[in-house]
Amino acid sequence: MAKPTDLKYTEDHDWVEKTGHVARLGITDFAQNELGDIVFVELPETGEEFAKGDELVVVESVKSVSNVKAPISGVVTSVNEDLESAPELINESPWEDGWLVELDIEDEEEFAGLLSEEEYEKLTSE
Image 1 (cartoon, rainbow, N blue to C red):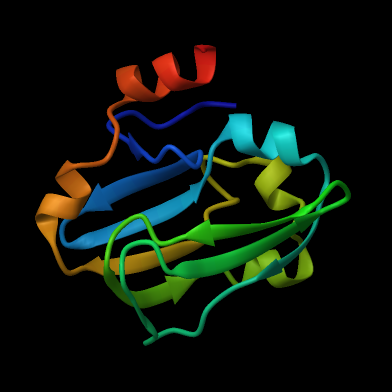
Image 2: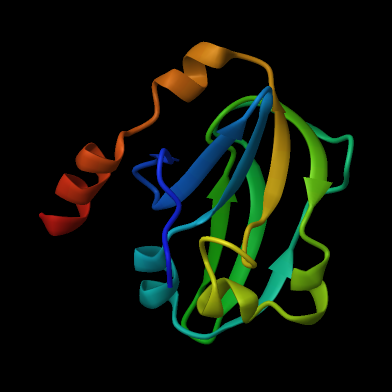
């Protein structure tokens, strides 16, 4: 499974990809491996506004229920509706088909403050 380049990361094992003024986010391969088989995803509504740190998405696996927090502040512009009927896409393709939501970025500095790939790899290797 190919991982996109130029991603930013959170300490909670989420990835963020910026295209223009929109950030697409998902959980990392590391996170989906830790969670195990994902069986349910609760996504926000398009148009909802979130502050950095707000609970954004609920991911339920056979092992646990996890809350994905907004890594940046923004308004939801799109959700991955495919996950409603096929949450296992997160396990199968966390970098591509298993993305969660897209946010209109409110504060570019919040995005810039996320972890680089090197910083994230150091975090997961500890």
